[in-house]
Length: 632
Image (tube, rainbow, N blue to C red; front, side, top):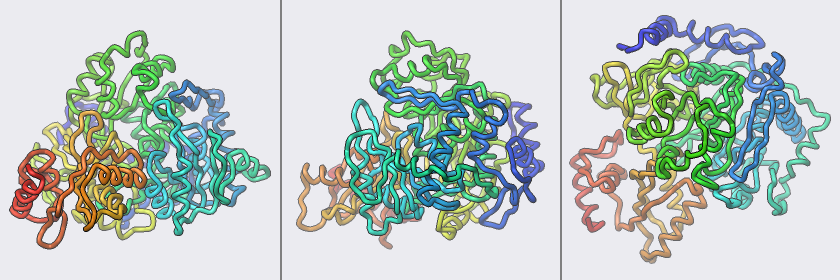
């Protein structure tokens, strides 16, 4: 692979020559209670990094800095859209984490137990995450915007015995209630939850005998140890759900050792994270970006990290720029959806705000389209501040492709995610596993594991083997389509397995279809994503009603309410089309390629897909019939 920048080329060559030694050197930049016995053990399809090494990611994020005399340095600035601002030094954040750690032990949480967190991006939620990893418990954070169905399913899959929940969150000036969602999720007869700790901001009373209040929870930790656990490198730190092509979410597992090495390294190489930074990732802790670049990577680097609860354009369109100005943000990480939203407001909101503290800007979550990049790069930040796209997944923990700002910035190619980072062996192949020529689209695969790549799916190793290492044998299947150019830059064209990305949130097609099917009026449902200027994608749904049910505005409202209850407001359905039958293959598989062709106004033969769901001829036949059904 030819790389434009010779400094980066030498760096990549070093990683390629001996990847185990390369990653071992990266790991040595972190604290270990005991050095590992072997850097890498590969037992396909799974593997272990730094086997026998002992560490703790929470200890490295907090205690290490305090012990090195940085206890008075600001660690966390927690902001909200109502003007709330709380600042915690590393010493203060550590004390808060210890208090919650003792509280968890006080309610019986032990090493290896799973703890659900259903809270907005507030300081207490971040402390709870760090407290879990401190005592060796495994946290599963569920985005506080998902409905009760999604919450109960994730808690059940993880086997979470404890749930830490908030009763409400703030969104565009409103108190968004969460307690009813929690109550509905706990009503699941298969719920493993034994104790619910409620972080209450409103006045609604407790309603479940399993619930205890936040203060009572903390008081129960008196006399309990708040000491950290010494964890073997490959013991899990957390699990996090990622949508797939089946209704059942996959829980990616990230470990104390490999995950922290991965995000600490890429945080340095790609983002240039350092202890003098005021870092702001505008994500939510419910997603992997929030885990990695609101919480763990900035704190491992000794940075000051900002956590913000609310809408970036509330109470006014200048909120985003005001926060940058007030907090003197040096590093910014946001999503293309946010860039498009800011772009819609124009440049006027910037007036009166000094954003010159920003040194670099990063985007991820979907492809940063060229018009949005041009606006952010040229109109907002000018030529002196790079706006850098990059790409990664829940399963990878941190960046896989990017422009190595922290090593030596390469030329930015708008629309490209950059190069495969060092120690990451990525290729573009056909579904048959053959290499794809330069410039042609194919499926991105990874041929060798790296620290941070999930080594299993919680409770389902067979699915991990089949979904990730079994589709194109011998390679890790990312599920993303891309082309690579002559300089080694990757150009992503979207998910190859029909994941719908709405404002940076990912939903599987079958997950949405399953939610629709929970409405008793629905016989069948099929969905696809269609482009949306603001959100990236929204959902187009095609629904077959059961006999005796009529198409009507009231029926549409009922279906929308069902999906909102199951998945929350992130599942934005733009249109519901009532049809007599879904397009299917002769073997009965739904052809989502036909949905995509309909919403894009294209021939199905022009739709790129990896579905094993019929030939182009079958798709075109079904497409013609379906268009007639829709009156196209």
